[in-house]
Length: 163
Image (cartoon, rainbow, N blue to C red; front, side, top):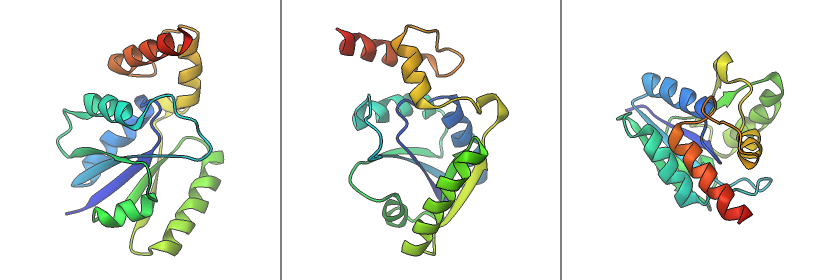
């Protein structure tokens, strides 16, 4: 069975993430979305909130599973879950440098797990979670960027934070 890990902060999940997930699900027997921390990011949503949000959006894709991985390296998580590879989306050439560096670090830790870089669909090249959070802060219609359930959670979270 070919199992792949799709790691990210997913804060929040957007249509670009879903596109990579759906395409990976067609190529591999199992896709395991791995919600991880990033030292350079201060997440809006907790791991539990992100898990719930993602599960709502992928529940109809049978071979996709969602996990929280707050205190472990993604490469270790991949090994523990029997993955053959880690998949990452590329929006721009500028994404490549960081992803290439991370792939080399991961290869140094575990050469048995490959990194696959999937080019994003052109419809989603402009999407990133930071921009979506910023738009949500100013009550912008997010329907072109995120599923309705995610938009609703963003609206609620902004109300909580602005209180």
